[in-house]
Image 1 (tube, rainbow, N blue to C red):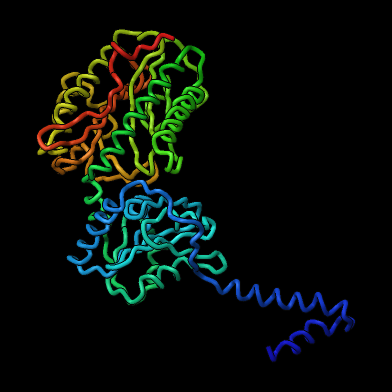
Image 2 (image 1 turned 60 degrees about the horizontal axis):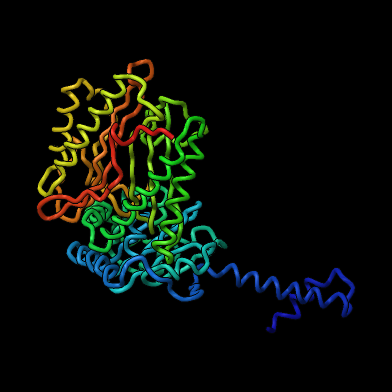
Length: 440
């Protein structure tokens, strides 16, 4: 440190040269050098603790990585940079918490590495099936620097075009100026659409736990009870059962939407403080989240009694459509054909005009903020044919506006696993007027 006396002199020239004053100056000098070194750290390893018990077996996770690597080899892709919740989780078992910081999973022919923010410390390493690198906050765009270090001189890089926004794409271009980018979002979605036996078992457990949430809702329904209190009863019941069934899992994201009266008009309407009245139409929506995997139970109910014959008629018609939809879900069926046939049923009762969304969708690594497998939805514009090991819902809904007879939203929802020759309904909670007029 030949430059030490000069720097010390510059720092101390305006103070009295004494032992008492030079000690803190020297300490400050060391601190400045340490701070400079600290700021230069752009990425690091943080192996704090050991790997936790994973959601799936190592064989399952390796199979997923082998599948994407075959796709990469076939299409001349040198590396994939996954940035979505669903693909990072699907290929690594790590589900990140965004909070304004980007994350990634880099898959090359020989290595898998998650890229996480320093604020998470060692948790991403413990969870990731593979390696992990942590980027620091000390310089802007350290994240892209970390990605660049891992991707290296790859010529063709896969990105998820349905997830990477324009600003992020520009920064990837700056970080990897020699790379050609190709979209892998659609190909990976198709991979996720076919579920493994381990995934199906987890989804079945989720359906069972959703039924428990539904039972908690029914017990809490009574005149004067508020939507949010009923929803809390359901969510608490599901969270506790998830913790008991999967004690090694992260407990996050499970929720309930419980709607009453006019609030039933939208399937994704938030919970409010509205209090129940006798004769209210009700909608329960229970969503247990197990290790990033979504399942659901949705039912129409009434508080104490069905107020008019028109309400009963509408409910029964929607149940009729639901029953027929359950029959139509089988291997070889085309999503658009199912939707068109169910449309005809609604047309017979002049109710098609009250339908507001598709008849069903895929299940797996998804939530209300990530993972929609848009290629597997029961809609008129989806030509996908159902195959064994797909998991899909049947959930017809009609909404009758206020001031029309029978006003409210009517919806039933079951989850089915497509088998070799038929399908298995894994939702056991009953539906229809004979079961769901709740008198507590």
